[in-house]
Image (cartoon, rainbow, N blue to C red; front, side):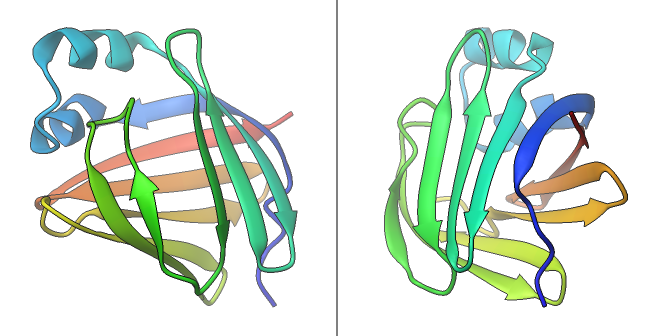
Length: 134
């Protein structure tokens, strides 16, 4: 049974994020701003339907998807690319594969206690973020 991701989560750590943004070819000005932010996650999880809102003072990003169904993801506001995205459960981990211009792009979410972990991947670079449930 997949873990319950519902809740409001506040970032408590953000490791190697600038290198991840470099791997996405995000310009230096946006990278500098993004690395200063501590975004929150607001997640609504209802069966196979999940909405993940990433909220910050600079930009917000919403993902609304059904687990196991491929969709075209518009990453305007992230790195201005489009990709074909599929998100599946692998045990208790929610795993995203984003097929497009950047090799090996995707992410994994999982919960340990009252912490939400996020591993971001692109072109061999890995960034790790941790959020605490409020």
